[in-house]
Length: 429
Ligand code: NIG
Ligand code: FE
Image (cartoon, rainbow, N blue to C red; front, side, top):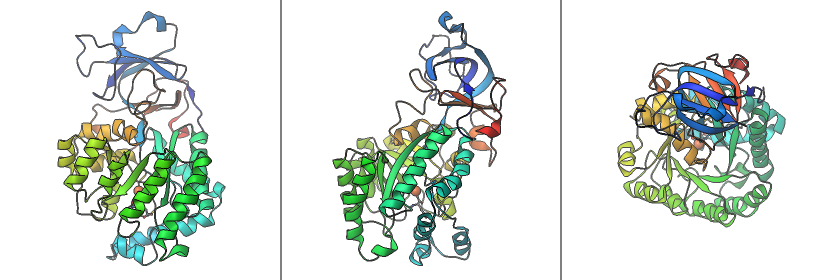
């Protein structure tokens, strides 16, 4: 299951770049957008990108792979997931079908807290075994970097368990995993009515301990009426800032709490959900360079009707990412391409916006903008060759996993296009 695959070192010729997602080193005046390019990989790194017929002679001794005009994108980036948890919540799906809202389900003791019970009851190995096939489903579609949050443990040992599993998944599958500590996701039952005491625990004990163990790449909070207040959110941000850890926020999902503007003041990497984002929030995110992460899977599952302010975000030039928000309650989604489709259909993103949303802008939302989300020299080789005639197909099919050729961390981990006969089959990803 792990990162098996053959070395991707070689000259990858005849690739059709998606404009904006491939950055050539050499731009010849007669090379128009859409002309074929070559990508040279050496020692797992991209070391040259340019016109197909201008590959430097120095690379002639490397293996030569013929992409046959396949569309090339960077490896996909899923920048917001809750992938590690025990149990599942199909019962809530049924409750919602019978008319209950997300808030009603949560207030009735379901929701996040029911996943907390199942997660606490599971061992680290059990959580790993549950999360592995979910990760595999995402990897088979070309995901090369993924964020995984804690937030279903809500106690030091259980949050640790989730984050350790996230790290182990990254190592076992040879994929970049960014861990996010979301201790302030919900109030655990034993702290009912003692929100301040729990926030203190998150800030003074859980976060410092997990950070010292190297388990925390970023810190997140669920800032909402049914979760944490603006003041509690700021307290967590201050604790993160003290440790030099970047922050992000579940913001304005169900109501306008002003969380995005607060997050922007702390230089947040991203504000996520943001259906109820205000003009002030947009302005604050714009000036802080904070990415807007759109989560159409949660919007769809909750049958939300409040659209995120796409036109205003676009007009302000706020980068928009698109992610699965994979979680057992509001978005049991395991296809980033489906999310791209839904971002177009439900949120009216253009296809280029959706594709940037699952690559370049998603990488920025994780602070990975210098290593992921773009095919360019000096980066680890993470790219996907797609069996499609045009880029729009990536956002057009519903629930189809194209048999792509996938290069992840310098290895050919799937070769659906048969570019290099030596690579393993599509199912080994
Ligand atoms: O991103 N909004 C808060 N957190 C998750 C939902 C978690 C759950 O319901 O288990 C989300 O949608
Ligand atoms: Fe989420």
